[in-house]
Image 1 (spheres, rainbow over the protein chains, first blue to last red):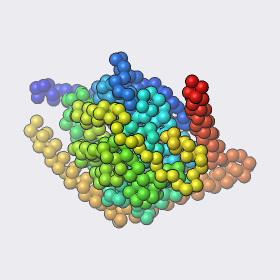
Image 2: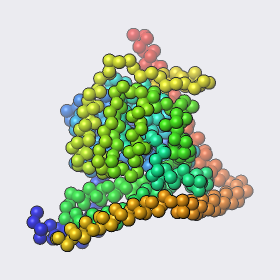
Image 3: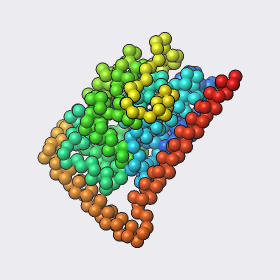
Image 4: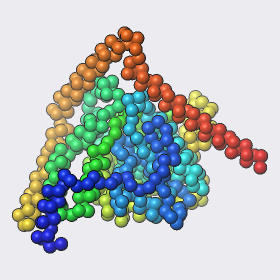
Length: 372
Length: 101
């Protein structure tokens, strides 16, 4: 494109920005295969040639963001790319919590809901297991689940998932500060309003709105860039509130007590010990991630018991490095190939059961044996 | 275009510098403490107003918003429990069918 043409395009696009059609997001065809409370499990329709692998893939997005970040736009969708590679892909859509979900516990989400999603997804494969991929807080939930309920987890992939909370980032500092009165906030709001969380994320880079505006001015001639930018903005402004009881546990047990690193965190009464994660594990961290810094995500690798573990450290930020065209061309094919290599049961013995706390009810023990 | 490119480079450098300064400032106890105190005061005020409204409402013998939330949450828990039981029954049936074969 010549310079004058580019300039003309830039100004035409800038002047027509208000009238620009809303971006289409989350358009990969999917069916709801399970619905419970506000969450649902979606199964992306497999490609016409059929599913290539024996093990389905379960994507666990963050609790506070919409799931369609992994299915942003046609041609720029992680889900679409994975389906095209022959995976049977499931994703949890957490939905929008209602006021009554202020009582929804962390255990109900990380044990009950993820367990159910895993059982439903596993039924569609031949191994009775599924590859689990957790992104951001979804990764933390997946780690907690895999440490206690390993039976149906064929492999664990975590993208920018915080497990250590002793970093000096703004969010950690703020939640650990004496003046952050968690009880007062939850009494007043029930669920943590998404506006409050979005405000906190914006404080991580207060100049970001200005930087975005300058970037749009710079690239306004590029229609493809603008479509991607507005799709991402639509997603970024479509957040959900955090269920109150789950948030209390998240802050007290993880941020303040650093429970995963200290081994003090529990799920449904059972200790969450990272060394109990013995399935093949792949962790992806990002060098310019200011939401989940490397020092918060990377320690997982040293603590888990897996013999087959791999860490990939990439340049880029928390969202861009996951959904960019570059990620679709490099990161996701790598993850897909890793899943393909772990599609069959390894020769070694199956994962041991997680430790059971004394006094656990017999029914719970039977359920644990079944991966529940 | 050279002017624009120059401006953009300057802007990027300024933005990076300013963001780092602001991050340091926001992490400082001098900002966090009053910010947290302000938020807590606002939240406590809201709780007090909500509590007074709920007390007045329940004095009329009517269920409060909290009562309704608790009831709805109990229903959601029941739904999950029923799905658990359905799963267990399906597993038991499958086991029984297998043992008959």
